[in-house]
Length: 333
Image 1 (cartoon, rainbow, N blue to C red):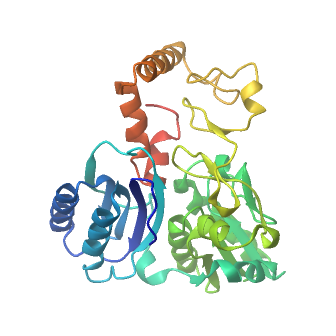
Image 2 (tube, one colour):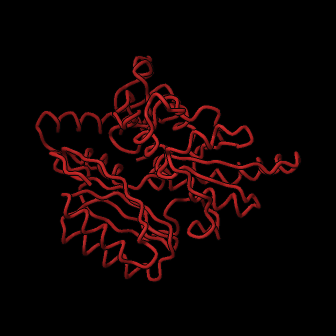
Image 3 (cartoon, rainbow, N blue to C red):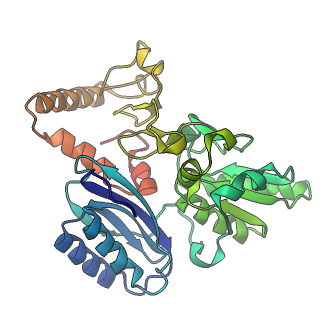
């Protein structure tokens, strides 16, 4: 990991492996993070860990090394980025039933996941006409960018994916079709769990993009890319493009949908309150709360201080990818 002038190292991490003692791991990890001055959120479930943390380089590496000491976690997946300002306010290590919420018992991503495909090999894999390519992300993410020819399940939550695939699988069986299935998501965690579910439904030839779209955009030259558009990310960048350059999208603070510059010009758009997609689905009470939050954030910015509303924004950014959007999918605070 290279050094950078930016003071905060941000590490997004996940790994599927059996956790022998969740409570002991929670206590030990919380202690190490606090001692190192690292902040963020880490989820621990029987199936593994998922989180995002931030601190100085050495402190973050100490935490990563601590997690990798647990049996089965030597291959912990980590993606690094840097921030000029502290992205998180506190450190939370939470126990959950799943580290990415699918809502189906018995899905064993640690042992049943599909085969990894490296970003540099992904173009060849999806060019095969006998391969079905599935985007495991949600509809608002797919709307701003995806791989050419990928199937969009049109789901609003990862919880919706199993039912969608069950219906899709039935059609394949009726056609006596058992194709190779290639799957992808933002950073790899959803498609990794999705491949395990798909394999449990009797489809053996299942692969997924290692490191997700983010690794692909980082490693594959734009001239060779098969990804069209921008990739939605769960932080203040909102979207990224090739080379992980920040995209053009702005986040609606009410419904959390990414908006293009043209959508910001829509008459229904009011900063911090609503956009064309949620203007007619929010109550006046909700809109009043959003207006007050935006007002207080603007006042705090002018005072160069942090208001409670900003803390709420930080709290929202502080959650790992998919768990966050299970909570925020409705736009509720």
